[in-house]
Image (cartoon, rainbow, N blue to C red):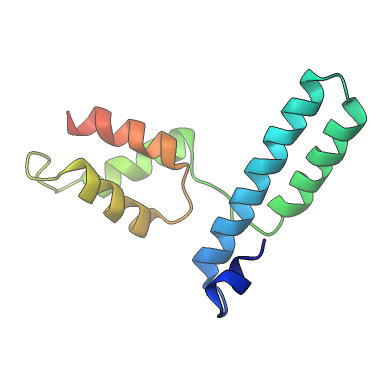
Length: 112
């Protein structure tokens, strides 16, 4: 969580969200490792921290909401002219906080 120090300036809101998402992911992975090692107390502590961190992150578009948002995003675009990379970049900019792996899967399906 020393992103601000590394940047030597204040973080933008998007950068702050990215840092929080990274921390959430690390804690979820740690909780899973603790659970696999039968260390339930440590796993529970990690998940409690996840709950606290999630308060500071806007809700993430996923599932049906994301699919509808992608359909709306692609409406009116020439899909044959749109590359995956540019579609991904534009979609992230337009849609904001999304599950990027789900977004990539949806775009690959719809662009092929």
